[in-house]
Length: 428
Image (cartoon, rainbow, N blue to C red; front, side):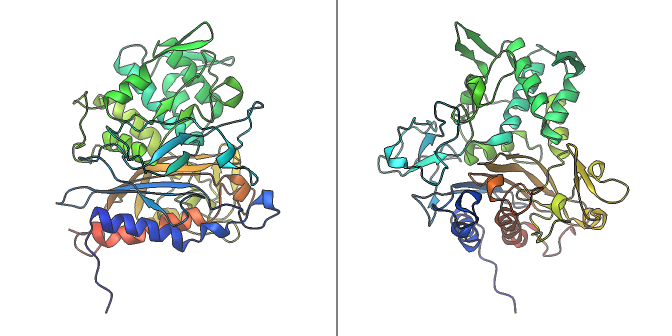
């Protein structure tokens, strides 16, 4: 007989997330900067999930791990899935040469000066542990996309307007899709320039004097979603004075942003100054289409990487067919991924509308998981931000350690019996 399924509560979900991380043994992750030996410090992971059981109330949890918290820390939210109240978030940082320094093996956190990242909580527990929030890498493009959609709602621009950038003119919609589905940095620069052109962000005298994104997110209770110090020419990376320490996301506010974008989710329960929908229906559709078209399935889901040696499956999500060539190989952003991915693509029971992010030092992933009709019915949101970038990857085409897709698979396996109401996925 199979073991009974524990009830789905915030407490059981949090413990399941904590145990899933611990079981993956992230403290033994090989690090290229240690000559392939294990990491010197336990990695930082910020992991949040919101589950939507059929006929029941949403269930949410957020756990955080770091060198300070190797056994994990369960976030405590204010009522109604409000801000986290028992974590002191600290902004990531760079040195004078714009190098990300917090994640170097020799980094001494206690000797570094840190800038707080306010969570929006009415009162943070004075005994709360610190948590250095890893840079979101290209996950930040989700914020840029939603900000562009907001500009469309404000009638500042239209999706089909031609927008010129870097000697190329294309519709805003095309720039946005390339930014998301293939994670184009050039398209991201174009969309950041557009935000300045629309007046959502303004600079004067070398300083940011207005940031409508921050004000808008604050009205929706999402204070840690930050797009600070970007430039009118589209600059958003470290050398532009933005990037690490300026563009920020926590896993908890990321899943709450997704909650506001998810058309299948019940109304968000936390207090908001703006009570209406985040975006109008036409703009929401564009955002969701961009998320659904994601080609980079290589962090929590890993279908794109199935032909790599030592492949580890993740969330069993379908890779969109547009990224599979006639031989079954994956082709995304100019890279060719080996193997025949067609069978797995056809059989995958889930859809994952999401965005990933990777640099040498960071890996992140967040999105909306839903079942494919006839194959599954589960529905949940997930976000993870880590310092486990490509320097921890086992192969040049991999994005991070295999431990991250293994974590995605473990989370999905735990959630499945709670979210498939009949016990037979995809059936009434």
